[in-house]
Length: 217
Ligand code: AP5
Image (cartoon, rainbow, N blue to C red):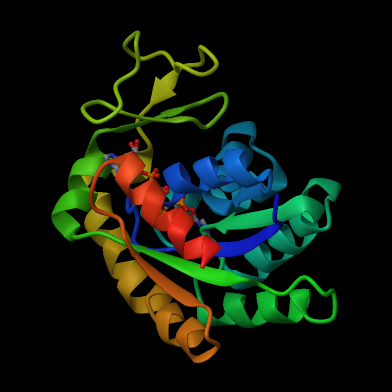
């Protein structure tokens, strides 16, 4: 099994978390979802969580220096030696530069930067129906992937909830943040020969095949 070292970016709701989990299972690489780490910290009211909570609720980005420290620490953990899928990091050009420096000289350079694309219509449908598990972070959807028992996670039996930032008025704000601060990563990674743009529209299986093809070629 090959070792995977990739970043996943794209607009909110494009399906990054869903596909990153599938890659994690297939390649044994660890999925580092910065959004999930921040939401858990906010629930537990840790120092990081208190710092991040307001940004999360507004759909704004948490400051770069906080995110860079968090990811640097996470990548030093032993499970990341068997590869990593950075889901939601980097999200700014500063974060991308910092990541490059972090990996420079470790022999663990990025293999590719996967950009998952979807139209705003698709994004709004996906986000407004998403339900997330409080306990294990598993993703469900009221229409596309409904839980067997309403409100209960299929994977661990935890409680499903609607993220505060998945309310319709917040989705528009997050899309603006993506366009202004994260979309420039396309040019950044294209210049480095790492960018792979993937069509995120279609079933989870169809998109999954495209993602696999992108990481394996
Ligand atoms: P984060 O959690 O990373 O949110 P996001 O990037 O907005 O992405 P989402 O989790 O909303 O969507 P996704 O693309 O993963 O889609 P998913 O697979 O869930 O970040 C949240 C916040 O944390 C940020 O706003 C910011 O405040 C902060 N943050 C995080 N990282 C940061 C950083 N680096 N710097 C600064 N701040 C940071 O799919 C969505 C739904 O659609 C699900 O219900 C799923 O079941 C369904 N679905 C998925 N694929 C399909 C398909 N093919 N067909 C049908 N349904 C599908």
